[in-house]
Image (cartoon, rainbow, N blue to C red; front, side, top):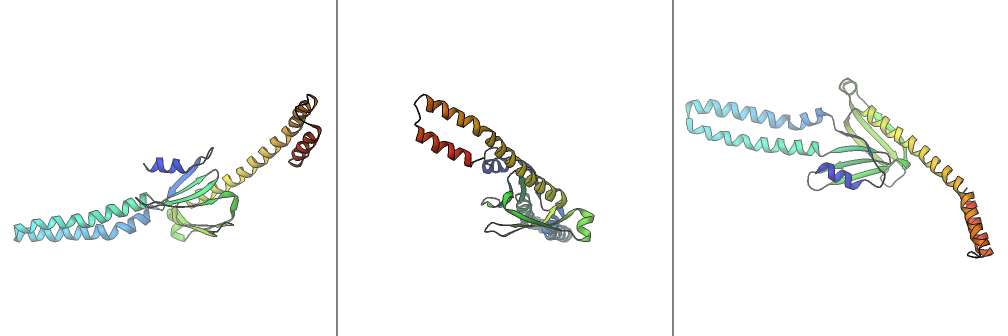
Amino acid sequence: MAKDYIQSMLGENERILLITRQHGFVLFSMILAEITVSVLLIAVVSVATIFFPPAAFGFVLVVLPLISMLRDILIWTNHEYLVTNRRVIQISGIFNKNVVDSSLEKVNDVKMTQSFFGRMFDYGDVEILTASEIGVNLFKRIGDPVKFKTAMLNAKEKMGFEGAGAHAQHAEDVPAMIAQLDELRKKGIVTEAEFQIKKAELLKKI
């Protein structure tokens, strides 16, 4: 379902280059409290059951931190960062989705911050400065930030080359289009005035 949702957001000819999440340490820090509570509950209830067998019903309480832990895992799993050949996208939310994206064309600068432990365990913050209304898009403690940054910058550079190639191809097509218009003019399908107007418009696009 998550993959279908992501695919539904992509434009024509847009493709995903990289998908990542926050580092596993983030998930561990989120569920550490639930794990601790679960272990303590199991230990306390187990000891209590020895002296008072009905206390075994206390194991039901373990369900509460387990439910909370499941919720944290789902939150972490559904918080994704994507790089496509056109955009950088941040998606969060289990049921209600929150999507923030920045067009690669509007990305002005990229700042990556890694602490000593971040370099050791391969996580860090990536801050994207854009010319859009968002201004700054911060991705905190993501896994393999160097790969994320590189994929984004490579996609931005390639987009520039693709744009230049498309412009060059369009420029090459202009003489052929003018020749076709001239043939229509000679056949009387297009008037001399219409031909000159269209010719001027095409020449401006070179």
